Image (cartoon, rainbow, N blue to C red; front, side, top):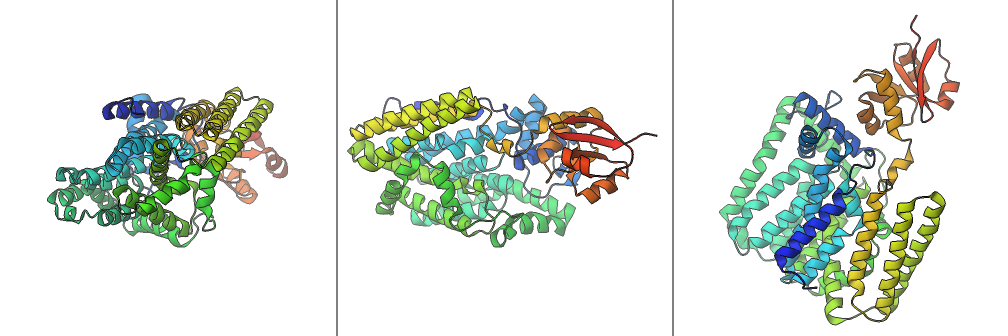
Amino acid sequence: MHLFPEKEWLFILLVISLVIWLIFLGNSSLRDWDEGTYALVAREIYRTGNWLYPTLQGEPFLLKPPLMQWLIACCYQIGGVQELTTRLPGAVLTAVGVPLLYLVGRLAFKQSLPALFAALVYLTMLPVVRHGRLAMLDGMTISFFLLLLFCLLKARQNRRYALGVGFCLGLIILTKGMVVLLLGAIACLFLFADRQLALLKSPYLWVGILLGNAPAIAWYTAQWQHYGNTFLEVHFQAQAFDRLIQPVEGHSGPVWYYLFELLKYGFPWLLFLPGGLYLAWKKRHTTWGSLVLLGTIVYLVTISFMRTKLPWYIMPVYPFLALAIGANLSEVWQSCDFRVRTWTIFLAIIAIAGLGGCVYFLIKKEPILIVMSIVLAISMSIAAWLVKHRDRKFIPVLFTGMYLVLILLVSSQSWIWELKEAFPVKPVAALIRQHALPGTTIYSSFAYNRPSLDFYSDCKVISASVAVLKEQFYHQSYLLLDHPTLQQIILSEYQVLGTANNFTLISPSIK
């Protein structure tokens, strides 16, 4: 595995990361909720030039800090308003996290092989690839945090790197707000565990914190002065602290919710996680051991006991898991210590699942996913055979197989499978744009509001009950009705403007 020197590995990791995060990035519609919402906010920044006080359809957007929306608005200015430019900033910054994790691992392990394995594991984790390609905040937040850890570790050799710690904290705040308290606490605990207390006396650290956080402090101060207590209540109370003590918008789950998320999407790397965590515990007094244990335990325990549960909250734990798995794979590579029976059985099960997927996608007539399933079945079968024969080459086979599987997945239009949970928005949005002026408020019989529909239609589509629909109709509003509601609702004269995806757009008749 020592084919290339460190700089070349960094370049290779960056290139293959950019490929998997950027290929066919704009081939699917924006997803509800975050993607559609951030795209709406960024488009209003782009159109109005109101960078300091972002709005969502004319109303103050107080939920999140604006760094992601600023970056998307910049991309809109360069490449126009489209899916690709919406997702580009987050995807690029997430991809940079792979070489950053290699650098962190190189400093933590003091050797390159486990660092390389950790970076490749992170590169081929399904949740990391998928969420990093979406216009969401988690991938770029992780990359800023990895940069922070790199600066902390590098500061042991050169105190000037401590300047970067403060700037990374500021970037995290401007991206995802109060999550900086949890990530900052992990970094601080690691500082103590790694016996770097002398760094706390370094003027570089405190100057970096002062300068790096100045833009975030200035932005928060401007919002508070402009919106008053409303900003504090929405941004801090509703969006941050309420999520600790109560389920927000019904997003709840048991304490083991995130362990189940790991089980759903963690294979095949989950096979090597117990061994990695055991190694970390055995070497808990080392830099990498303390980092893995602190990051995994503190972060997982905190989000597990939060009352609000969402799948992407688990994202920042993946770099720590990748480091643990990378350490275990490195140990296997060097010592050829195999758990033959367990690994062979599980890899064979994944191979059989790949064959099952092949049959399923044949029925669904999804050619790219058929090829994906075949690649998964073949690579896992080869890896299982190599494990059975105690051949360490199963590790590069797993990396190659998973990389190709993920490339094929994102090349299809199924990598955002949530889009199939509701009607496709683009045909309905095209119908609305054809008949309604931008900014028009339209009332819909659909069960909930969809920011993606608002984005594509350039109108505000509000979900409403039948009673409200009737009331708004007599106030000369457009209605977007599904067929059962259209047959059920009793209205006076109206005109049908068009139909798309089983939705009909109607307006009061012009007398």
